[in-house]
Length: 145
Image (cartoon, rainbow, N blue to C red; front, side, top):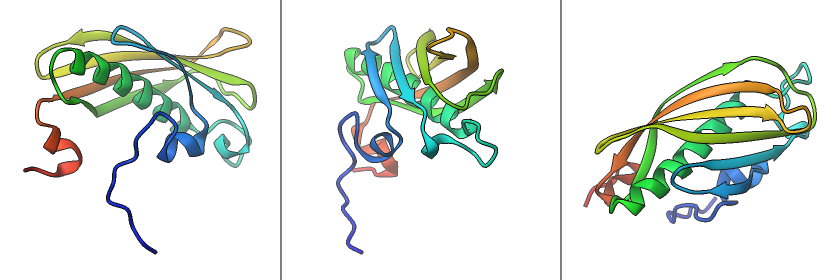
């Protein structure tokens, strides 16, 4: 198998395209994602796998934090900690993830992500994601120039 060393780019490339994440709103103060649940997202008991919520939280927080970082002449932001709590289960429908900043400093940011059942409007999961602001674009992916 031939490998491509080019990083995935675009909002629906790589894992995001495989999972089916849709971007509803992207900004430095708020990022909103949605995901229509299907069989790809379920664990053996027919419930949405907890990793899906973690993925949505990490993605929403990282995108919002990166937009903020780039607006402030940094290269972007990468997640270093993701703590996700699960309150209710879902089997079908649409998950809506809303990320907002709690703290934005020179070297790190902390974002809160609330995930809800779009139809019922009920809170399903909540996460807190801590991110590191990147000043050197070569540091992404562990490469250095």
